[in-house]
Image (cartoon, rainbow, N blue to C red):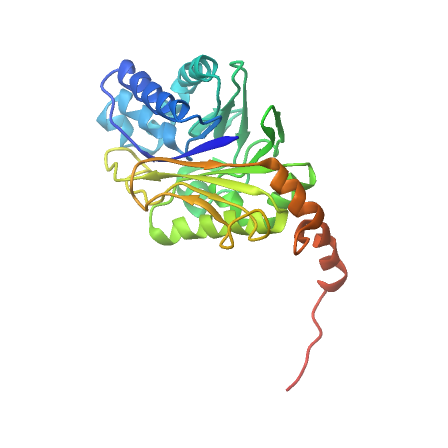
Length: 292
């Protein structure tokens, strides 16, 4: 398969057609390059707040409410594009009001036009302390024509047991949509994504917001790039970096992925991290105290 992962700049829209035009342009470009799977970043849907005007977009509660109210409409646009271009799309996540709380939800679209979603599991300090966003529904495995796909939204990628749960459930690809303000945030998520690829002997696909958007709350500054990572083992680059963009530069990063390489490295790699995971349990008790 061919994946396209976005370094995505947020825009300001004066009408709905501006948003539709942007989505069509991004999807058609990636599909035109032969991509089968397109990955947009965390909180990419925050640009929808612009349609509610400057005061609402700059407000903590107002921006959440405005975006949440438009998610259904934006999902209709992306479902139609997935069907038209015959691609899978992980849409940009959004704060969504659900069951009396706000969750960070990434929609996932199939070429059939069907839709599902993955909620973020573990909130950053900003999300939980300032924004009031909470962990949502459980992790999922998406059974697709491209293989078994899991999603770890940004901070989730920094927690190995979440990645392990996905690989134990059969995930071959883990998508990592992210939104990070500064370079250190980008690297935290990238290191997490690369570590999950190493531990699970799988491929991780990271998308990022890029550029400044000072007029929309919570996404004023954004640093990142697209990246695709695998285990540094046979069938993969020795660095584990299959593809990467340029930091801060908008656009798609593309990579060809052969699932057979994942199956081979899991069965007979130079190391067997996925198989040997449970070897930790007997050796990870309370360390003995040694006096020197």
